[in-house]
Image (cartoon, rainbow, N blue to C red):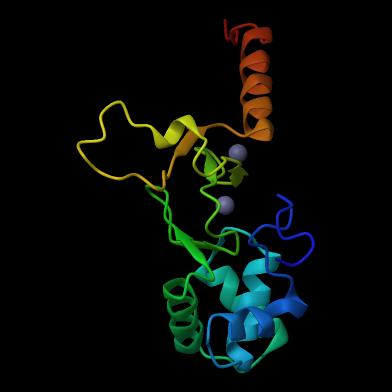
Length: 169
Ligand SMILES: [Zn+2]
Ligand SMILES: [Zn+2]
């Protein structure tokens, strides 16, 4: 175990310069598209494919859409990236893997925030009835409004309440 590996802030995180190490650990060949995609996702947690393509191209201008798609698939299959797809959203990718964390999703602006959950000790791993399954992971999506969207909504409601009904007599 390397120092810091147990720290919650670095668990599963891939810093750009760690990319080749991460790939080697997963027995994957270190290629430029893989490094670019890893760095892009590390920099933009919960990035959509479109965001990953744009960010990867900043580093590797001639990387093709197909290469990014294939790389996302390879890295997800290898467990280096986690793919989430909240209902109504496109697939998103993140470098936080294997820590059973959950997501808060804003219904209005579709922003996504991580919520920590401790593997093995969390009540979310205890379904009301496990139907005989040996549960090792829970994938919880909390839906609501993010602080800025709910502030906006409150302001709108406040405005609507303050304004007297339009008088056109
Ligand atoms: Zn929002
Ligand atoms: Zn996440």
